[in-house]
Amino acid sequence: MRYTVEDGGRLNNFAVEPKMYKAEPPTKSQKRSYIILGSVGAVLVGLLVVVAASVS
Image: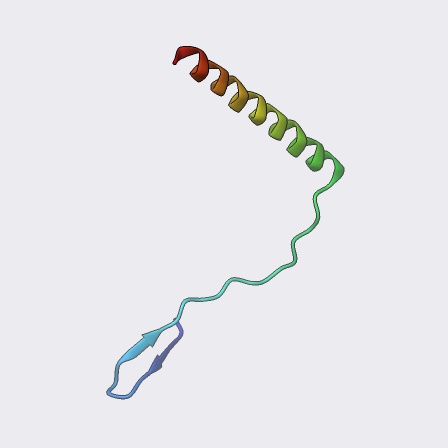
């Protein structure tokens, strides 16, 4: 564990930082999946709005 000793003998602990990496752009199949999930979500939200409007 990494720590430093401050004035007066107090220990100051530091968290271990994770290794940095670059994000990779999504592939064509991932993009297609995002579009499908987004459209399904939009349809579900639309149906909920219609049900809420018809109930009230």
